[in-house]
Length: 253
Length: 220
Image 1 (cartoon, rainbow over the protein chains, first blue to last red):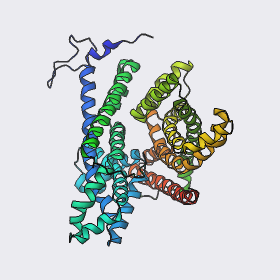
Image 2 (cartoon, rainbow over the protein chains, first blue to last red):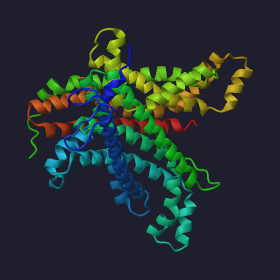
Image 3 (cartoon, rainbow over the protein chains, first blue to last red):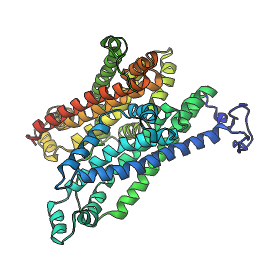
Image 4 (cartoon, helix red, strand yellow):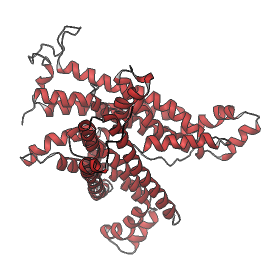
C-alpha cells in the first residue's frame, strides 16, 4: 500500500496537480488540499484559542465565587453551573448552542456558527477550569486568607493580591491538560460543519479517496500542536513558579 | 415555542431505548476492555525493559494527543482494511473505544501503581515473591483499590464521549434523539431532552462516585 502524497498538491475543484503545491489564492483563485489543510488548522487553532479565553475568564470567576466565605448563594450558583456544564456531553451542548439557543435567545439569533461553537466549547471547559481554580484556592493554607484579612484587605483585595496569584500558579499543570483538551475537543466543531481539521480529514479523505494520507497529515498536525501547547505551558510553569513553594492539588485529567 | 407533547413513552421506546442500550453497552465494554488493556500497557511501561517501555509510551502518548473523533475516523477507515470486510459502525465504535480508553486507563493504573509505597515492593521481594506474584498479590490489589474512584470518573467521561460515535453514524443514544427530532419535526425539543437524559445519568453516576470515594477514603 503505497502512500500518494501528491494528493495535497491537487486543486480542490479540478483535482489537477498544481505546481508548487499552493493555489493562487484570492477569491476566484485556485485552492489546493494543502491550502485547505493549513486553513483548517487555522480554524482549529482559532476555535480552541477563543474557547480557551471564554473558559479561562468564566471558569476563574465561577471557581472564585465558589470559595467566597460569606456568600452561600453565590457558591451554590457556582456549584450548579459546574454540575450543569460538566454532566452534559460536549457534543450535545454544541447541538444545543447550534440548534436551540439561536431560536430561544434572540441575542444569539445572528451569531456566526463559529462563535456558537466557541461559546459551547468555552462554557463546557469553564466548568472544568472552575473546578481547578476552586481546588487551587482551597489548596492554599487557610492562614493566607487570614493574613490578608489581618492586613486590612477587603475580600476582593485579598483575593486579588494574596489568594489568586498563588492559586493560579498551583494550577498551571492541570490547566496544561485542559488547554490540550480544549484543542482536541475543538474537533467536535466538525459536527456543525465548521471547517476545522477533523472536518477537513473527513471531507478531503472522502473527496480524494486518499484517506490514509489525509488522516496522517491531520494526525501529525494534532500531535505537533499538542506538543507545542505542552512546551509553552511548561515554559509558563517554569516562569511563574514560586521558589520553594510546593503544593499539590487533586486535579482530574 | 417549544412543544414536548409528541414525546410520548411510545416514541421513547421506538427511538431512544435501543440507542440508550447501545451507549451503556459501549460504556461497559470500553471500561472493562480499557482497564484490561490499560493495565497491560501500564505494566509494559513499568517493566524496566526499554523497547517495551518505548512502544507502550508511544502508543499511550499518541492516543492521548489526538482527538477521539480523529481516532474514530482512523478506525472506521482502517478496520475494514485489516479485517478484509466491513464490520459496521457499532462494532467499529466498540473496538475504537477499547483501544482509545486503554491509553487513558493505563495512565490511571500507572499512577496507581506508582502511588504504592516502595516498601510494599521490597516487602514482597523480601518474601521471595517473583515479579508476577508481587504484582498480583501485593501491588495491584492495593493500587486498584485506590484507583476505583478515578476509574468511575473516567467511566462517566467515557459515557459522555460515547455520543461522539455520531460521526461514524453508529446508533447510540444521541443518534436516537437526532432521528426522533427529525422524524417528528421537533429537533430542538429533542436535543433538550437528550441533554436532560444525559444530565440525569451522569449526575447520578457522579453522585455514586462521591459516595464510593467517601467509603474508600477511610482506609487511606
